[in-house]
Image (cartoon, rainbow, N blue to C red):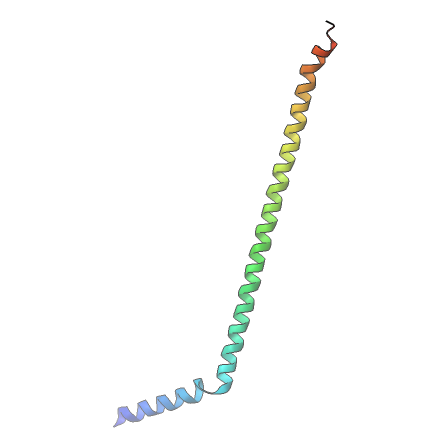
Length: 87
């Protein structure tokens, strides 16, 4: 009989706490806050990835410009003596 009484008290307490409307609304509010937090975290990750991509693009672009300038300098050094020759 004692076990049935404890079970009844537990079920009553459970129903009083977890089945009340305010608990359900709190749970919904917390899940909304969690969803918003996850969205902000995802947005932050995307912004960070975008920033890294931009940095990598700038690095590659600057290296390309340096290589292009170097190749133009080499081309000038090679072509100048040829252009100065008179045939």
